[in-house]
Each structure stands twice: as structure tokens, then as C-alpha cells.
Image: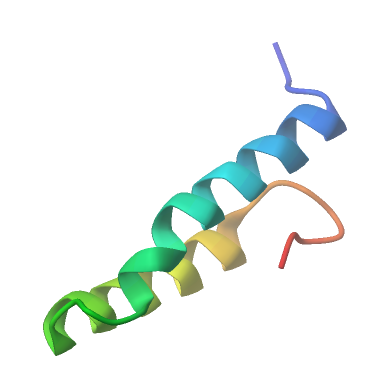
Length: 53
């Protein structure tokens, strides 16, 4: 079925917390750019409203 609002918020928070370390050092520039791209894509496609930051 359709996930509840609190499930969507928890999932959005989880995926953003998993991806965000790849945006920071000690990773290479290419991995950090990939992390930024993932954060952007996940932030803009999340189902929770208002969006998790």
C-alpha cells in the first residue's frame, strides 16, 4: 500500500543520512561530486512534504 507520512519522513531521513558522508572528505573529488548529485536527486524526488533537509 501507500506508505504513511511518518514512514516517508523516516525513509527520507535515512537515505539522506546514508548518502551525506560521501559528500565530505576524505573521499576523492569524483566521489564527492557523486555524493552531491545523489543528495540533490534524493532531495528533489522524496515523497515527504515538507521535504527533509
